[in-house]
Image (cartoon, rainbow, N blue to C red; front, top):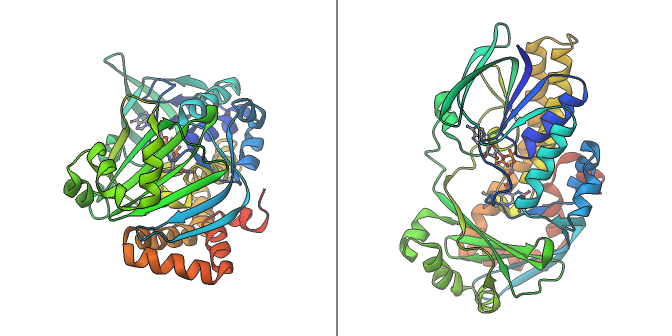
Length: 382
Ligand SMILES: Cc1cc2nc3c(=O)[nH]c(=O)nc-3n(C[C@H](O)[C@H](O)[C@H](O)COP(=O)(O)OP(=O)(O)OC[C@H]3O[C@@H](n4cnc5c(N)ncnc54)[C@H](O)[C@@H]3O)c2cc1C
């Protein structure tokens, strides 16, 4: 019987694995992809991640990957309005191609056994009796037992269904694309360009590349012609600032990464006795650029509690109560504000009025930038 099985080797899963392995617990970290891989993400890491990376002992490695420095944010609307502001600290742009293997490596160096290309199919059991995790590797189904299981498998996985979690219906009407380009100098700006039925974010990552990531209503994609190219050459060109960017951008990837049925509903911090961290518990609206920080932060909340349970210091019920309480206190408000802002950006008239308001009341912009970050960093931005 292992101490912990972590399902998913993204930010939340790797953070859990580092924390628990460092304390001497036997950790098996299972990841379905084989790294490096392009993942769908805006790849904008908000200022507060620096402190979280430092805690995980990966700050120097992150700097060694030469991330882009991002200090300013701009929002543009279809009718040519724009709002510009400074970020509360230095954010960084680093591709998931570089970031995820770096974190996975940190987990194995801390002592976790990491397996890639391993798809978890099913989890059964309780914290009282222990868990059985079934996963597929090289076409074979393998079983492992563990005292605790961490669900860090992201925003959407087939595992949700086998765990009896609600499917993504009602709130999963979004589709998202991400693609790397060359050819434009965005300097230290992260840009958010609103268009009818969606918005497109872009900022630099390492090596001068520009990451373009957009999210749109499924209906907008359908109306545009059902493909990324049709969306890019049609609806997205209705925002002149965005069209000007695409005039000079040259693809640096063969094709975009895409994800459908994206949902922003808060799900749950536990499914039975499986502890959920990162997007598996809830995903913040991408325009906040704080999903990766939230994933690390939720793992930083859960890690010491899971360790406390494994070390016999707290009962599992207490772990559940305390993680759920701190998760709600830390994220509920931030998630709610993010959803409201995103809904506004999807509607041209609201986006227009919003940008006018932000320009008239600059403190309002500062408030939103801070209110969509986690509570600790709001008080003490890195
Ligand atoms: C359009 C869009 C843009 C975004 N832009 C940004 C941004 O700019 N900045 C930001 O901070 N956040 C952004 N986010 C959010 C951010 O990507 C997530 O919040 C973050 O990746 C969450 O980390 P995680 O570890 O919870 O999940 P993930 O990073 O998704 O990791 C989950 C891992 O689990 C693995 N997995 C899934 N199922 C299984 C299984 N059955 N068995 C084994 N492994 C499995 C997956 O392969 C994956 O590696 C964006 C999201 C979207 C949709």
